[in-house]
Length: 174
Ligand SMILES: [Zn+2]
Image (cartoon, rainbow, N blue to C red):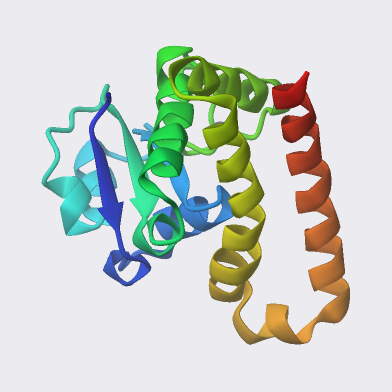
């Protein structure tokens, strides 16, 4: 398993990685983005991440504590293996957006990687809970009052989440 840390959102003094984590549903595989000096990259990370043995080549997993709290141990393991899948399958090797994987095929592949090593049930439960994590944990933090007060935005985001998760759940069942 690649190095991983569980970090509270409050530990992120720089909004950048916190927002990536929130947008990913609370778990994310991250690698150094060489658009900035490595030393500066490290300073953007919470202290828990800086304590890892990181080099510019290291890919590691960060989990939002607020998301971890909603997962059982089996679901957490499946989620970590999904992120490990992104690393092992080389999904972060190309032109990634600062560690954020947005390719739907990559998500299918990482889900399949986790299912092979845990169970279809555990990965299904993670994806089912991811909607709750995104709507109840991530988006109120990301959008704050603007999100919770904006019904149109809520519906739009909720629909997009449903579509993305439904496609992944359908793959798991297929
Ligand atoms: Zn993923």
